Length: 318
Length: 182
Ligand code: SF4
Image (cartoon, rainbow over all chains, first blue to last red; front, side, top):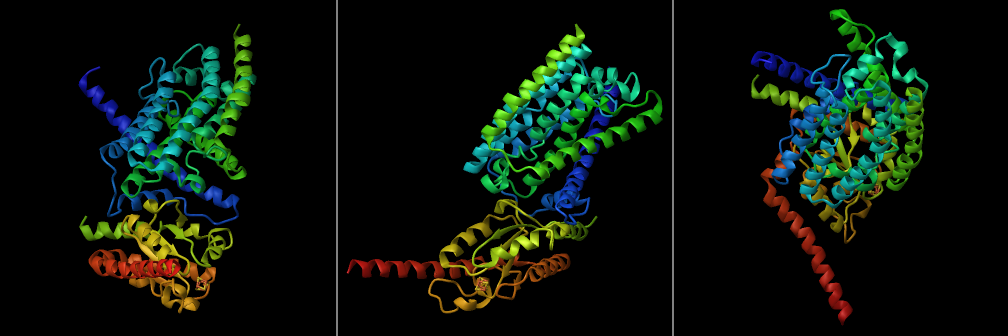
């Protein structure tokens, strides 16, 4: 690849990062509105996410707790943006390569480590508890999620997310993974894992505002909290896109041409919105688990269901 | 764009996204749930309650303050990131209310931290609290809610007042110890 091609590609990736953040901030506001409607309230306007970030970034004083505290946030946000660049969005591939399913899994662990660094630097005991809980949560939901991922890889015989998306879109909607019986089970498992990734109730144990005063974020204020909100916004998009890419064909319904691209993009948007809304509805219906309950839930019930799906898929392939 | 225009936008944003930390002393905490839940729903103005002072913009004092609590309130206020605002509820924060002759409560909150808005009543009803928030939004928009600047400018005086209140308690405690010793 020559220099100009690389330049163009990086420009496209940056543009995508902006689009992802924009959609994420939109989702933050719309999500609060949905939760409010479930509570029979009016709720904030749908653009509340943008207002909040603008306010936080325009704060006049910002307390820092040393350079690790400053850099940890950049660490988190760049990790999640890189993960976004590796995911096919509406069938458009940016940096997709072979084996990127594993890579994305590793990249998704970076933000949690960034969190841990920042919270550790702030020295607040609540933050320490929060980080410990976040790492335990990560350990719990990744096991069932990885098992479902392996099932997908065995079925489609590839480790590239882009290839999985491609194979799911050969016959339009009817070839989406979610319409294949074992993957219905796997999708249900992965959706609960997604609930943990998004830190929605019943799995909002790491942030738990009433117990440990929002956990890792306890010392973040002003611009730092604003950056954290940007991270939260983009992580919603990344995690729902991961689910859509794996089970809903990445939203690809047409092939070839600019019209198909736009249509795919819109379908992708609608699908991630549906996945996000589903997780919000679960969020409003349940109280919070304790950490050991969440751990048991994922490693016992979820892992068993995921293994059943894996064996089923293996049997089908053979 | 000029600086004034930018700060105008910043004010517009901070007006529609007031995050508060409510310091529930006195009798006022009971008036907050109706303000937050579906009856009055303050979230439609972008007001949300936050877990820690670092994240908050508005400090809500909901009633009388003993001198010991005042110490914590000052700490909380100083941890908040400016621009920050204070809303004080109830007559206890204005002039002592029905605790006007109590030996261990403060009478005027304004002497210790800068208050932007007082809400009269014992206790003010949820409508009153909503009204205070709307008024605060208006003041922010006009650039008149400058309590935090006042605190910076007259820091020495505020500190002196606070010290006086704290020392008063220390003296009393010492006397009590002495009396017990006798
Ligand atoms: S103003 Fe009235 S209701 Fe409020 S704290 Fe004082 S006595 Fe209680």
